[in-house]
Image 1: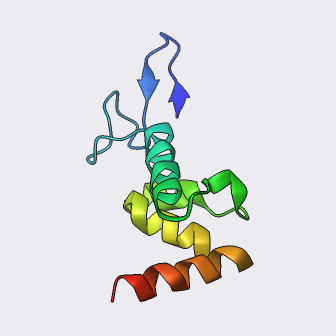
Image 2 (image 1 turned 90 degrees about the vertical axis):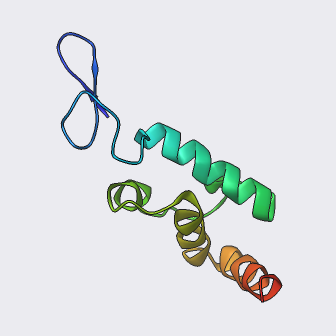
Length: 88
């Protein structure tokens, strides 16, 4: 998110409003973090870096982004496998 000269927020679509999903990048990352904590007890800062900004721009859900975060980390991969086994 960048700020205009008048201090108002400018979101990824260049407008003075939220994305179609109604989320700023910061709001999205809070939801990704909450999803990860609820599923594996660890937040996104505990895993290897993932391209969260692109995930947000591409319109991924917080759950999809959380799974992508897990998939990019060796410990996260094992956690993701356990999550997927539990949902079957």
